[in-house]
Image (cartoon, rainbow, N blue to C red; front, side, top):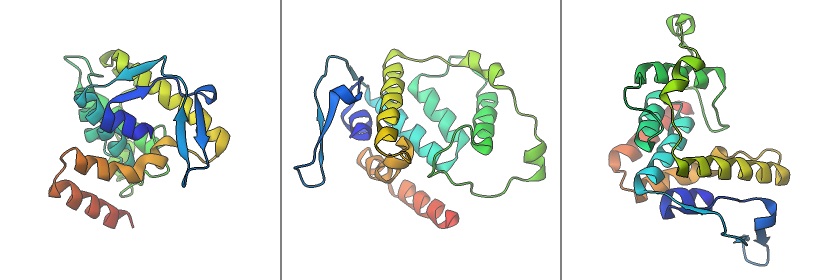
Length: 190
């Protein structure tokens, strides 16, 4: 429901704690009930697409795509050293600091990659900014993670929404090259 709220409808409840949510299990497959829209946020189409691209890049372990999505989201300041940011994101993927159960390493690291000096997190933090709407997205995801883990200790947002991402990509205009790329990535992973 939240992936659709973020990436399809561009409107979401920013406060998804247990007091604001319920499940109607009398409905086949269940139905999510939201009680309180006192805190809600609207996303631009560019932000909705950017969130979808960040999720896709985490699943695919693609640092360059992740940095491009963060730039499009307005999370990187003018004059940022994108290559440094990309190196840190890549390192975060490789070390497991940023991951999902769905993320799969495509190949083993080469010796050169293992020995490559990566900029420190602190060196690139100066390039980041957090637009207000995205602060609400982060808050909602964090609260959902807490609620999800209470219900199922194996819950992880990106893992949970990963199967829906390609469908939304196509709805948002991704063409045959996206579909072919995803088929190829899935083939390589298996």
